[in-house]
Image (cartoon, rainbow, N blue to C red; front, side, top):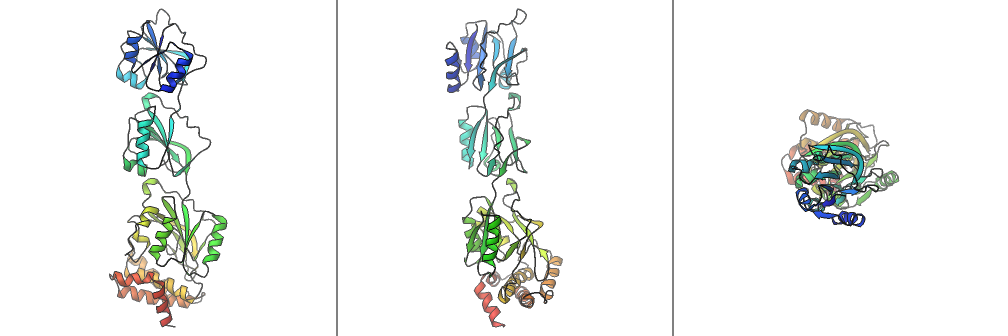
Length: 437
């Protein structure tokens, strides 16, 4: 019987080998294993394999194979236990890739690869710790924002020839979730945060789905708010509520503080969500700083655009938003995406004041040009419709009056931030409404 030498530092696997084969030795490298061996051949047992139950290390090379490296099956590959001549010269590259040039493949199952370890990560430091602690040259990281598939066994295997890169698996639609990491391909904090890893291969197998984003319903004094919130809870019990916080910016900041997901949905108190809207939109990690706004339908003038629509905000940026800007949505990020699906009806025409208030605020923002990236022709067309269409609808005249006054106020105060900020003060708006009854 030839000497058996365990190569590596995995104490648990070495103890398991010694329990079955008490004469097994230990070395730090293949070359050291050859030196300490007293037999013509030496069995090499790497520290990332389990010896197969029926394998007894009793194979004897034939007389024509005395100078050949014998490779045995390691699961489906020939990169595990091997029988090496004591005098064989093996390069570092062959050892790294477990691919010996002068070889004979023996179709006997000698070992099975150890499963790569799994580490759960919240921050980059968790990844660095896993990089240090992993017993093997590859390891899984599971971020806190995904739900791993119960059917996936985390038994993916890549031969040593393919261990110089990271493998990113599908998290729903995007490769931005679970990663099989290589110790030879460390990535940066930014790559970790955005899951936009430079040295990677994408595996088109869905092994996780993103944790659904938190939903926050923000209401102040909308007459239909309780009814709308109750209807939403019936479909989406995870929805939270912020009520009665004075100031648009402050209410959204309070909403963001309730959330544990890195993005969160916002529903206005007067929004009636359409039946086919499901709050299941997925944002790729590399787009997590983008403000997303869906379309809503105006019940007075039938316009369909982002006014009053459901929004998806970056949580951290919302908490730290610039509260000095009159338009809250563009206070959060310079990155913006309009999603063309309809999310809701903005049922703001519940009474005279709310109809006036909503139209006044929107038309002030339109005419003062405080909304980033707005197009002049589109803005003028919207102002025209706001100020002329819908008299026959419930509280339509109040909305048109608010639109006209808001358009005039915005035009007169272009560039005057302090004056424009007043549109977020509902008490001030109520005074204007009452003064013109």
